[in-house]
Image 1: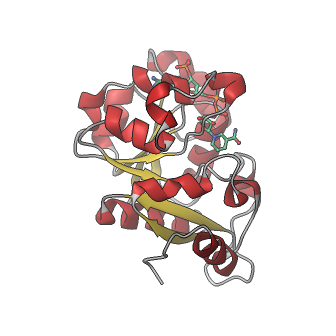
Image 2 (image 1 turned 90 degrees about the vertical axis):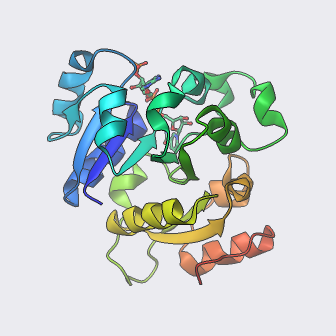
Image 3 (image 1 turned 180 degrees about the vertical axis):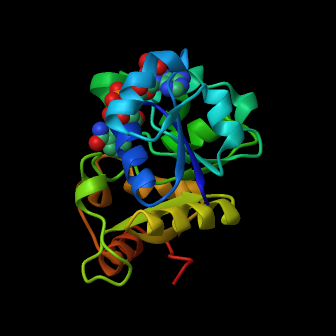
Length: 215
Ligand SMILES: NC(=O)c1ccc[n+]([C@@H]2O[C@H](COP(=O)([O-])OP(=O)(O)OC[C@H]3O[C@@H](n4cnc5c(N)ncnc54)[C@H](OP(=O)(O)O)[C@@H]3O)[C@@H](O)[C@H]2O)c1
């Protein structure tokens, strides 16, 4: 994995961009409009990241990360994502997103996003770590206490690609299985509110009734 696409040039998008650049990825970053509008943000917040359109980012990336406010997910053009690996790092945050959309009430927000981006290979992760912790928490593989991040998605190869990226960025990936399992690390859950190493996260997933398929 060498090229990361990031949709969203805000807190999460630029934090992941900086870290991806640090570990040697190429980074293409986009907001909703003309890339020229975020060229300066990219230059200052993630030097080395290239500001492009959303379509260009997705088309050229091995993995694309969605880091836009959840209520904006419906503005994403599904056609550009078909067949692509997409990491949903978004959360429902009432202050910015308003009430939970009706289509998400019965399921998880990532299932709602996957339904909108029909044909995309959607994986949920990076949602249960603060943007500032992307820089403060990475540790080398096998370091004691290395922070773990849960990964849920219905496409096993897409989950595997996301797990490789997580490891590259300095975290232990833990496979939580299908996308629906993301329910146990949405806001308000123990996992969302906590900070766990691999063993701790696996224990939390087990407590929540989710089987770890990677161990
Ligand atoms: N803050 C955290 O620590 C944290 C941690 C994990 C997950 N999250 C979740 O991550 C998401 C992003 O949070 P944030 O704090 O980074 O938000 P933010 O700082 O408000 O940034 C959002 C970015 O998304 C862009 N955007 C909006 N619509 C877009 C579209 N259709 N295509 C491409 N870009 C678009 C915005 O730019 P324009 O409006 O100019 O296009 C802006 O650059 C949220 O769902 C949040 O809940 C946050």
